[in-house]
Length: 115
Image: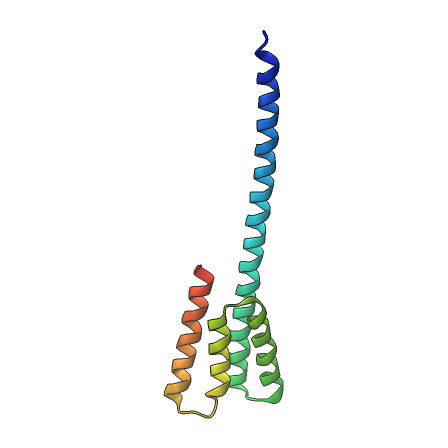
């Protein structure tokens, strides 16, 4: 009979600790999911702005690209930011250099979203 009270107390503490651990794990998963969604949105916005700027070059589309580039600077990896800037830097370069920058940008985005 003397062991019943410690057993009940132990189960209560165990349940409480499990609840706390579950709470923090759920918070962490939610934060990771939100971070992924922010990156994904920034990358898709950048690609859309790049497409618009390539199809219909204008100051407005260039500014839109710059805005999405800033989103990528905030949420993305350093490689994505580097290659997004390289797209701008190769604007008047030969097409091969620009294509390399674009391929590198896409690969950096994939790597960042995978990991």
